[in-house]
Length: 175
Image 1 (cartoon, rainbow, N blue to C red):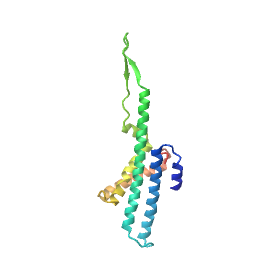
Image 2: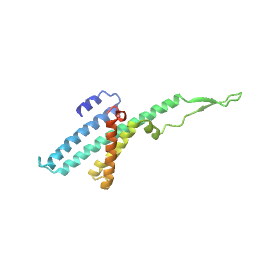
Image 3: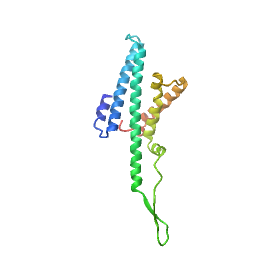
Image 4: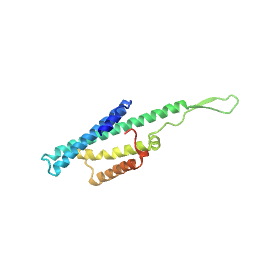
């Protein structure tokens, strides 16, 4: 985690850098507090686990929110780049008659679904983060979904995580 923070520091895009750094810091604190909870549960330490479970869920949720901020920023950048490409590629079309009336034809706007279908690592990361979000929200009692719903969200999130781990082409970079 610390190496990830250090490697994220030279990134020039401020939103990307801070979202990565803060996500990694929150993830590190989540893991630290989660290990503390584990020590309490196996009776190595004596403390109230509810307080620390809540604290770990707060760090986990903050890490997910930072990752989602990064995803939204990436989407905004991709859509902006596509708009600039489209502006530069507006082309002239003539009617084919002697007077040749020139009309400018704009390509259709670049949509969010098109953005995600062309950027699979980003789509996978968004799905993973959105499905992950339900677990800390439930632990913090902001929402009260059924156990089955949480299990399905956890399975989807785990599948997306495994997919991006096994196939490096689906890993969002920089990470």
